[in-house]
Image 1 (cartoon, rainbow, N blue to C red):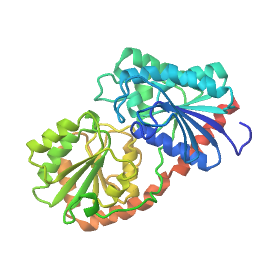
Image 2 (cartoon, helix red, strand yellow):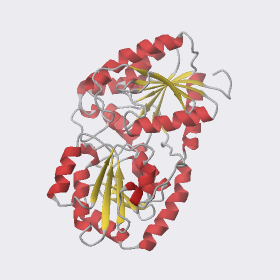
Image 3 (cartoon, rainbow, N blue to C red):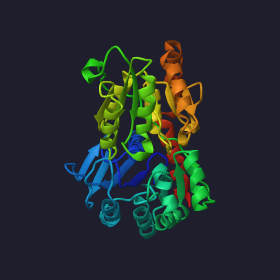
Image 4 (cartoon, rainbow, N blue to C red):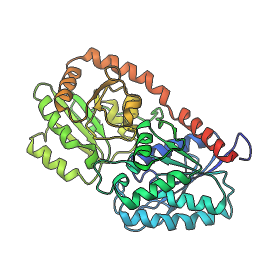
Length: 389
């Protein structure tokens, strides 16, 4: 480190917004907050059609490297992940000729991990590895690293060789120890959310009904999000309450969801928005509650975004969200798979404007504890420790 006021940080993340999902947005929030604090931030990430190979966005310098067969903005292909490693290493070598980095912050053990660790080994720059949910454990993914021998060995090696390791939740820390036998210290730093200061829109401008209660959910349309089960639950609840379900996101499960909506005859009371960017806050701001039937969340940045919008939250209790969601306070935490209880509490919430208002006010205040500035300062503490050795 040059001095205590200034770090020069190389961030390596194969998915950095607008490419990718939650882990990328967590990374971006921290990167931009660190830049706002006066640190020099350089990001190496994947190129995607139409995106510039180089740009400066919110004081973050972004270099995008070519990868093979990245056909979807939200979902990486195996060739794109594999090709990212040599492409990233090649670009990093060029950058190191002109940049003097103090620390490398590598996001995701696979595929970013091998690239970040190789660069660290060759340059002598300490490497801090940040791990996320699907990076370590995804019960719905066929090639989840925790049950795939080659990937499991790679993740274990990355966890053991990095100078420091950061997890976004105690849930992922637990899985790192349980499935990979990791004994070393893992710093748990919750992701941060930033206050939304953009424009707002009315329901009619967003194509939503004015006279119904709006339930929202957000995320990539993948098996882990379990949105077909959410449609089953909504189908039962909407018989008794005038409500509308808003599903934000894009992904491979979209066709299945469209068929399910048609089969349940919910076409007039469910909206699939497709991919959303910052306009997600516009949709959340006109909603009445946030609902999630995801079978697992590494942390669940979307829950903080919902809290920032003042929404009560109903979700299953399997994942990192149990670190901060409080049953009966921020909303309701339901035992995984208990659809009957989910319906009960959702009906309870929809039927009580007073409960929704109380939880909304509580969440607006409580979420301030998780603003990005706090997380960025905790990251800096870990970076300082890594550079001392």
